[in-house]
View 1 (spheres, one colour):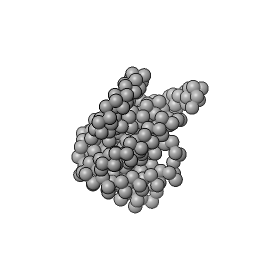
View 2 (tube, helix red, strand yellow):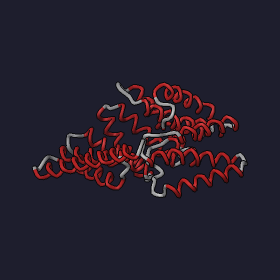
View 3 (tube, rainbow, N blue to C red):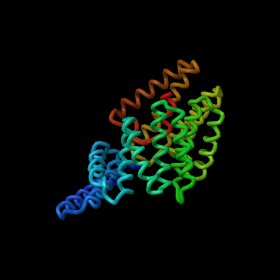
Length: 299
């Protein structure tokens, strides 16, 4: 995406945010009800979060939750809790993510919303895996997959994330051969539903590389991680922090792999490349997306 296109998108985002803020001010002036105001704050929070503006997103989510709690708009209340869970996870506030996720899950289950229950199960699973609770993460990711499969509609990307989270959970428990079955299913879907160069494909190759590494298939793991890095470097059309984060996730896992397999010179080169990228993008967030590909190098 060229500079002009990025500038146009940024301007459009600013205009959408200003429009929402204007609607909120107008609704407040007309003494709108809590549910209406809360819904507007939720839309604004989601817009900020999509733009990776986490501080104003958190403020808007807090306002939405305060207004929506206790109203009849329970679906929107759950969505606000869900959004806050994603924000907490992206900023590595893991205990808060787990707590908000459980609250959102309870509301979704009460509403009979299996799709959103499935997605929040997967988010909770990622939180548990980052906290190194592999068995609990396995149970949450399995529950998420069950809900997503039973939902009347589903998102393929969420299914892929659930499969890969389940794969990591199994491999963390030394069940890496079984974990690869999840990767196979995820990759089959990813190849048919997403472009070759996509975040989903990066995550799938990274997960495969991790599982192969931990089961002792060193050459296969090396090929998988190099493919993950190739795809990550070819990503386009996404915010810069997401592109940088995707590459760094793979590079850090590959660096850990190189060290463990005693390839010191290559590990030194990879560390230098990581350092250069971090220096070039010091303001980029490391958790801009809830990325399953960030799990491997942390274990």
